[in-house]
Amino acid sequence: MVIYNKNIEPLATFSDAKIVNEFINSFIYYRSNQSIIKFSEFKKLNNKIKQYRWREIMSPEDFRVDILAFNIMPNHYHFLIKQLNDGGIVTFMSNLANSITRFYNVKNKRLGPIFLPQFKSKRINSIEQLVYVSRYIHTNQYASGLIKNINDIFECPYSSIKEYIGDNKLLINTEVILNYFNNDRSKFKEFITKNADDQKQKKYLNHLHSTTPQG
Image: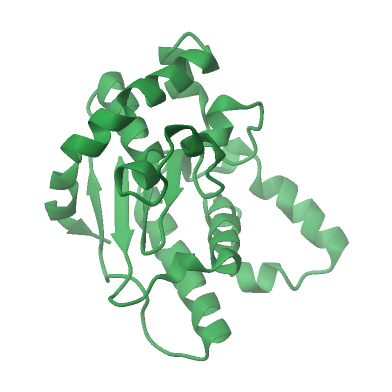
């Protein structure tokens, strides 16, 4: 499932690196069924308890969703997600939105929502489509003109691209998509690079923004 949501105008929530880092930590936390208290409360636990609970949070056996890719733009974000439990995506998205909204509002001394009330989604029907969507997600900064050099895609700090081209596997599950490339990260990188300009010209997946809202 590809998930999309954006800020209420004229906010650009993710222009602030602290908000982005909080968002990433929050989605790692709420991915797990073990996230039984608010993330804001979890951060207040003493270090020993927090470390113990974090090991539980990071256990794949307790995930409600598997995150296959993500990209965070200044005023919107995309996830590529596999649901592991009934209602897992809706619970994950609700918890995440509430958490980051609370954090943003406290930091900026404001009230009210920061995202559109319902996220949008589109089902993925094949491995080919999954790979295609992962390319769209990872080239979003380039396609939108935020970065000018194709190679800068691989230095983007706010997407999962480094999980795919490096050895870091802390945040997401890369196995499903990399298996399509016989676990050859260089082939995945080549796939991204060769198609980035085509992506920029055609604006792939614009239809996603008109799909039925959920949440």
